[in-house]
Amino acid sequence: MLHALRQQGLSYSEIARQIGYGRRSVAKWLKFETPPDRQRAALKPTSPWYFESFLAESWKDGNRCGRHWFNDVKQRGYTGSFANLERLLGTWRRADDVPPSALKSEPVRDPETGHAISPVVAAALCIMP
Image (cartoon, rainbow, N blue to C red; front, side, top):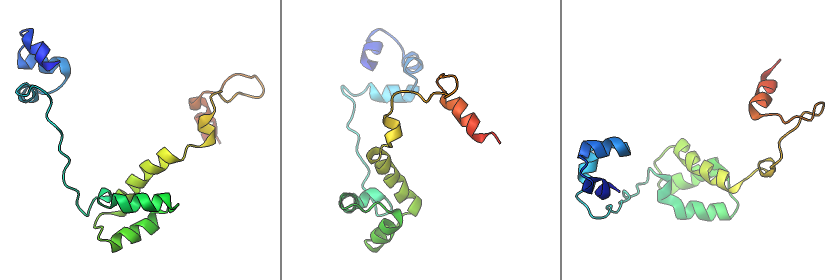
């Protein structure tokens, strides 16, 4: 797309305004025929992804407790924080555990009127004294 805009005679600044990136980024990207491959940084013991194979095995075995995992990876050399590990586990939990209520497609209805209750109205009713 960048090359097509450039062939139309647009300047780097005009292209940058259209796509929402900086002029210097556009100039750099136009030097390549295809986008350069993104290189992932080398993993370090401060990252939970460094222990991904161990964590994935524990997950398959049914261990879902972050405190247990934290102690296990600490013994294996993890130097990161508990919060960083929990962030990774949270994404796995959200992907794995879908509550049955989320699978419902029909809205909750008011028993007296039969009208659908929006999530905003439900939240407001929950916080009322």
